[in-house]
Length: 307
Image 1: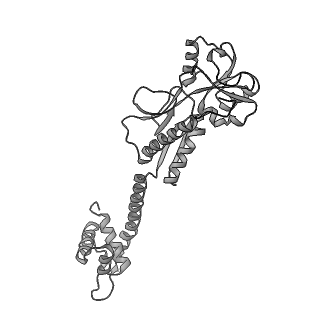
Image 2: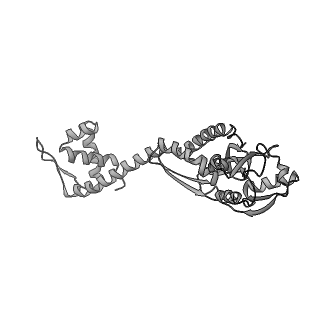
Image 3: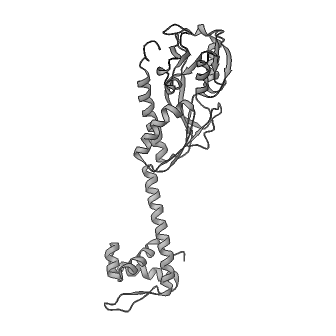
């Protein structure tokens, strides 16, 4: 049975469907002798005749053995066609991509990326895994957004710089830029000291600025709620501020920091030495495009009285 080939089964089904070797040959684009050869090879492989050949104008008839082979043959051909279609869709970018992400990327960058991917490949499967960690595990994902460089068997593509802004209760600081040293000893709400938050605090300490961190929370919206409640101000990346749409919030003001702190850097990471699917490669391309467009959009000053 190892000698049975899909082309043999295709010839069998064509002869059964068409009722003659000649019409089967026309359907398959073969000569009649080629179809006869395929059927002969099949009969040799299965050990018996699959057709009764009455001769003349009368149609050939499938034998009982031929019926068994035909039933399984149709199923095998259907699976082969499904495999070919799946491979074709995969090569076109219709597959699955697993992406690691974090809050501000999920809220601002990823919606644009997913919209672009779905416009090109409506059937693609995009799965997001959100985690705040300073030890990114890229191995089990196709791609990961992260706010820093990673050592080891990881490749990366820098997408954009994400400057830090000061968010405060309206009236807590005069309109316009604020010097970072104004934050020394001031009450502040912040994220836990992991990822780029740790680097931010190290930079403040290096400049002799030691805020009084009165509350820490991982949730961006919780940080802003604490600022609204008067618990203190917060130094947040531009993407976080943008996603919160603070321009319409009468309780808060947003200030540029001058001199500026080193910006948060956002990278796209993936496992080195791993073959990427077409969908993964296209995701990287769209991410680079979206990041460039977003960086240009956010480079403009905010509303009067904010930045």
